[in-house]
Amino acid sequence: MIPYTTEDGSKYRDYGDDAVVAVKKIVILRDVGLSVKEIKEALNNHSYFTTAMWNKHIEQLKERMIEAQRHFEEMIHYAEELRDSSSMVLRFAEEFDDPSESRIYTKIMAHVFSKIRSFIYSLSQDGILESSTSQDEDISDLSDFFDVFIQRLERFHDKGIAPEAIEVQQLLGTLHQRLLRYYGTAVYYIYTIIKDIPPKDLGISEDDSEDYALFLEMFDICANWFRYAKSIDAALDMEMFASKFASEIKAFDEKVEESTYDAMAEIIQDVCKLPSQISLDFASEQKFKYGFEAGMDWAKEDLNDPSDLSEEGKAFEAYLFSAIKEYIHSLHSDPSSNEI
Image (cartoon, rainbow, N blue to C red; front, side):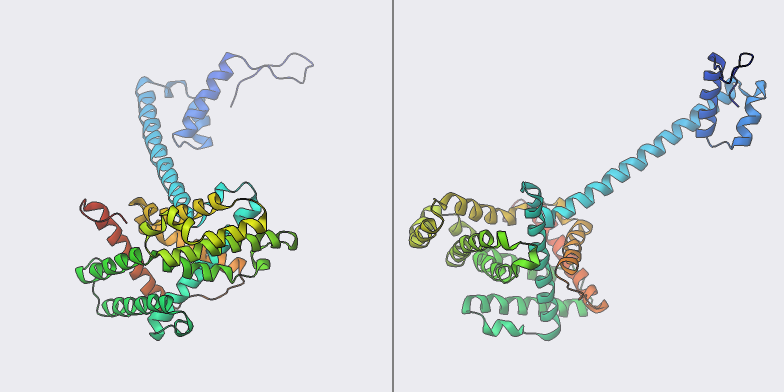
């Protein structure tokens, strides 16, 4: 369909200005949806290219441009959703210089997500988590509170009460305030989950296992401080931390032969920031669920955990997610509410 000329005895084709015009016509007719046969017929019909026909094709191209713009805006939105929701699990991973450290972090988070899901499901099915009876008093108290919370929420779910109903939202408000009041205890409990992960399950080599053990030892001091402080405000009192845990910090400094107080303080401050990072955007149910499920996928892949919830468990989990989403929205829409 593209005109050309050849010199006598030459295998080469020469394309002139008329070829450029033909290519432009072909591209335009193709983009407005004409078939190859229709394009060929149009090129051979000089009366086809009237002003009216060009105006028609211009309008068709504008419509396609609008459709393409809408399509790419949707693709960008989906990509942003997946990026932002993945950050629930990978929020700090990108800060690591070593990719292996990032992978270790995601495996730790996957393990935590797996434990949280099992914890919620155990409470909703069995009432009292068996392990809670063997925990120390403060951990046991927190476990018992979650037990009551899940049982009451499950009753709301069974009665068909909507996640945004006042009863459900008040229950979440009580949980929220309890978590803020005993944030340090919850942090310590999560740490007990992390420290029990065998280094080999995290992909840590024997050469690095000693460094990992030292990191856990340092984090153990921070976790015990959280347990002692309980609330976020109290945990942020670095002067009190330095005073109350002076002997532990000194002993660890002597062991590693350098000062570690600044590193510990940074860990404590970062952990205290986590609740404030639950933004309104994060409350999107798709993002919230995607991040949680991404953690579960990693748990199955990295921890050889094939377990999954039943349909009944998944329905209750979806109900919990929806209720939390509504609660976060209500917090951000009420200027008088406490910061999450």
